[in-house]
Amino acid sequence: MKNTPVIPSSAWIFLIWLILMTLLPFSLILGMSFLQRTDLGNIVFAFSLKNYQQLLDWIYFKVLLKTLWLAFGATLSCLMIGFPVAYFLARVQGPLKSIGLILLFIPFWTNFILRIYGIVSLFGSNGLFNQILATLGAPEVSILYTRLGVYIGLVYNYLPFLVVPIYSSLEKLDPFLREAASDLGATRFQTFRKVILPNIKEGVFIGSLFVFIPMLGEYVIPDLLGGAKEAFLGKVMVEQFFILQDWPLGSAIATVLSVLLLGALWLQNRWTSKNQQPQSQELSHAI
Amino acid sequence: MGTQRIVSLFLALVCIIGGIIFLRSKVSQTNTLRVCTWSNYFPDKSLEEFTAKTGIRVELTYISSNEELFAKLKAGATGFDIIQPSDYITRRLIALSMLAPLEPRLLTNLHHIDPYFFKLSYDPNLKYSVPFTFGTTGIAVNTSKVPVDTQDISWSFLFDSKDPKHTSLLDDMREVFAAVLFLKGISPNTRDLASLEDSKGTISQAKNRVLMFTSEPKALLLKGELSISHMYSVDAIQAARENPNIKFFIPREGGIIWTDNFAIPATSTRIEEAHQFINFFLEPEQNLKIVEENWLATPNKTAKAMLPESIQKNPQLYPPAEVVKTLSFLEELGETLPRISRMWTELKS
Image (cartoon, rainbow over all chains, first blue to last red; front, side, top):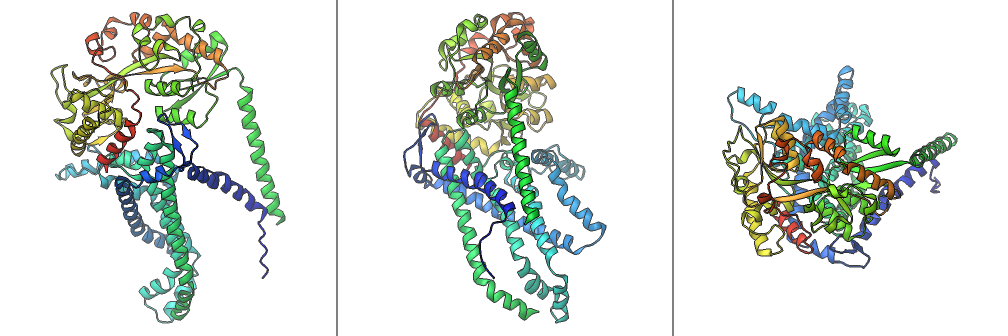
């Protein structure tokens, strides 16, 4: 097989898009993070590490850890809810499948802010949830404007982004693999662990990233459902840009976050390429 | 490969043609004034009258915060001919030479503005801006939930709220610090770190009790989720129109006063028309229409005199002279602002 790197002409559009909309803004942010600013927010073109030194403050570390923890927990919950949904959608046939898929995509037809306000009226102190509790004689539960509210909002909003990649990797799975495994005497659990899981690992991982990454920068949900009582990274970043006019510091936070994520991706990549060989052997053993 | 190339060429062509059409539509509107404003400031009818009188069409763009406006201008947005920054952003825009100086000869109606507004520190003598409306920051109370039998309340009404589970603070560090500083009898523009640190403690305690921080409490107040809110007077008065039990108070220790202004960005290419626009809405009759429609307080003394007596005497819209004395504008804090921001992050982390 000859390996001449030919870029198909249709890919150029995407490539140009990528350069203009991803690479260029990121470079600007990276560059900005090494600049300084005046009190009024004017950028001073002088190289400095001041912004990164400022980030060594424990307070940012605390906010970062809290944000990572929240996003990690919410991603895990998304997985726990989303995986069975994706599995069900991939296995089921007929009208149930179409209905399930439509239900999965319906939230995308509505504006994100409107859906969040929907949650507000559902869980508010006069909301449906508390009204039901009241008729049952139970005390009022405050979910809104707590960390639980933020958590529910994150899981609710990002769940479909996780279900779709897992669903599509399950769809692509050859149904005969499952049959072959059971013919060769594998139990259902063994089939799942040794045959299905290794084949959809990528989908699960990508789905998790799809929800984890935007959760790290999320600031609308903590504002509207958390009552802005806790500082998460997204809000702190936005405040640097808008309230304090400190674009260099805001850029430094954004850069650190991007580097952390790229680092995690790189590690994962190395890990999968190392494990590729033994796992496919294991797979052929299992089958 | 062949079909791919055709598809990609087609897509590129669509983009180029779309871009040309888009740009042409922008260029062709030569006699259009681009106004960047807050939602609900200009009724359509008033704008139609302006177009009928001057032949200048108006295109509105809305902003939802001063920070958004400032960031837009700072990032190089051009094409706005009129903007409506609040006092503290006006101050910053002037310092950064981002506003065009106003030409007094084109503003023949400027004398209708109350002399009070010519003496403010953010733009003395109104060289760069003309006030459009003003208001205060205080406490709104749903008196059917939390009875209040006096006009004289303190900021402690907010920070030691009797109904903390239905109380909100503004999600704005300057406003919240200012409120606590007023309570402690210190200037809201203090740069004294010890006082600020002390205020941080008070806010931190309040944070654990109150329901939330929000800069848009109006809807929640009307829905009954909130009964005591740290709030801007305009929002509170609009809420009071829908629910008369909602009352707005400027606490006795004092409060923040702010203005929303007309200004012309230095990048505007229609300076003359922009002046016409400002001057048109300085006409008392035109000003009156907007103010009555939207329940705004007007700095236009001639227009104010034409309002019904009851509105002129409404202390929520027009605080009496002795209250005005206790009000302060928020001033630029220089290097102290990042310190406050750090405290704000700290108490929320």
